Image 1 (cartoon, one colour):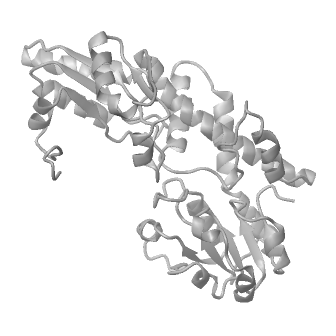
Image 2 (cartoon, helix red, strand yellow):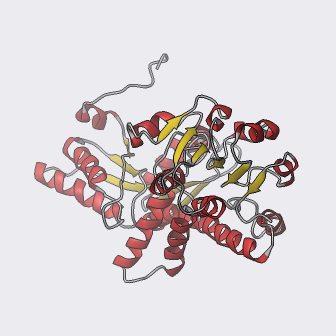
Image 3 (cartoon, rainbow, N blue to C red):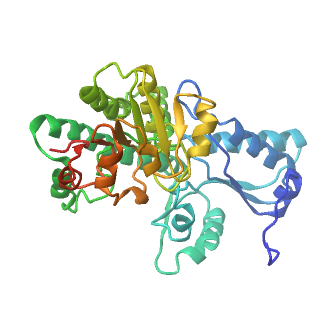
Length: 382
């Protein structure tokens, strides 16, 4: 901004006329049937069509179903026809692969830059646009538009599948007397499998995986295909969000009236305050149903929790992790924030009414809390 290279405007006409390259990066919230709602994407496309006077590259950056570029192209064509003008344009799919909490770093150092385009002029402009981000080696992956649209959904669906697979395996490990952490090390060392997204836990959440899995299932259903694996991924994840509650019930009984629990972590993952589809929401509500009360701590998501739960009297908030333990029957860990990694287990034991940690993220080597006299229940741990 200081250099005069960044400007903001609410004037659509000004924005459209300014740039040859027009990014559409609006929300695509899930519709009631699980499909992505494209009304904001198409509204942006129509605004471009109403105001463009020279060649434009219109880029779908939003996560959108296969076939959206065709709808964007048609929306622009309708607006141009209504104006009685012919202006050349290209529609490109350029999905983002950014992680919440690390988006800036991911953008500056991308693994790959997927570009779905079918005319040389648009491809050359995309190469010029991203040249500063790939000086080290070629990162652009050029493909047709529909393949690029499917790539985004396929990537998130694959990662969600790995998570649900490990979560189901963790439940089996418990039943068989095995330890999922040891299993993870045994399979992750295989280069065909790798280490990423092999951590068992209490389910995935956020704005991407749940929405994109649902949208891909719906896209397939509309095309006459039932994605059996992906449906199982979603079902397994829904069930996994209940696992910590099941462990609480197994230890304290189904009637939790008069019981009070400390909860560490509200966000669906560290380094964000996002609580959309967060396991913490399910866990808190299930504890309420059984008569319990909760004191929660999260380094950044407590304001978001207050917005979601309002003035719920059964939910209190602590300003420090250890303060959440006061008067609690047990500690339940839901998000793997770094500040939870090395607690003083002796202090935790002294503050809890019952010396119980139920860890939904397998943050600790089991022997450490147990050496301090704590009962320690992880996910898929021996």
